[in-house]
Image (cartoon, rainbow, N blue to C red; front, side, top):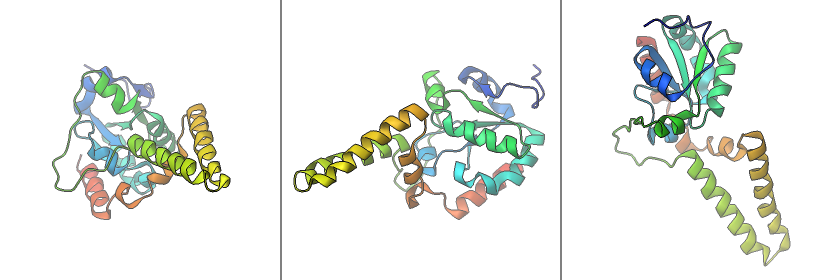
Length: 196
């Protein structure tokens, strides 16, 4: 079966299309290492969105050989990564609905074997942090009403997040050490990308 040339295809594939073409794709997972460790598409390489600039030369070379499929949890970060790649002359496709749509379509995620404890998925980290800030604000707000502003800030942030389909708290949490790739892991990922 022939597929359109990379420069003429749609910018998105649904889970079924991606599954049928998976062996021919370079899958780039732009989530944090913690999210990636909770399960990813088979063969996916993890280059977090905020480390994409370092991988641009290798991704440019890889795009000549194979089509790049960019994946995240829901599709939002993947689309940002696709736009960044396009700004640098690299054509890529995204997975509509991200890993959520992949599993909803009945496709399995790969769960790597490792000895260290797997960090929580980003969505879970955000829910925990938002809940902790709200509880703290409510509790301390009984002593000093000014602490209730933290609760209002989280509520406003959640509304803004829903309206814009972005999450500032996730962006902040992604910068924590347990969510950042180790230098050696990123080097190994880039070497694997060069080998494809």
